[in-house]
Length: 155
Image 1 (cartoon, one colour):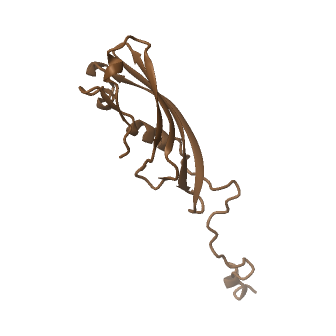
Image 2 (spheres, rainbow, N blue to C red):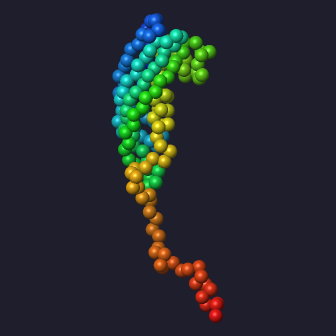
């Protein structure tokens, strides 16, 4: 798993509104049939809020995705942008991963991965003109008609 873990213990000691920004440039394994061609490149801004930290992430990545019609892999560029709040008080967190660890660390990878996967279309197409896998079909002129059976029986 890539290291998108950040220690924000110093920011927790500062007043509301204080912030800092870090650059992101990490290879990502999405653990799916979708593969990352380029590292995730962008930035994360950590902002001190009452009882927690708000993180604003933005970045871009190029993925290799299988076409939903023909099955061939193709490249697609994607930009993502999202915000996530992490809490000091576990009672404020909707899920355990939103709690700031006792060491003052937070992990962004699950959120970056989820945001990338959610933005991939359900049936991605390599091009608008993709013809799909074309099975070999005999010409309709060569196929017998279902009515050919009746030809010899009708007088």
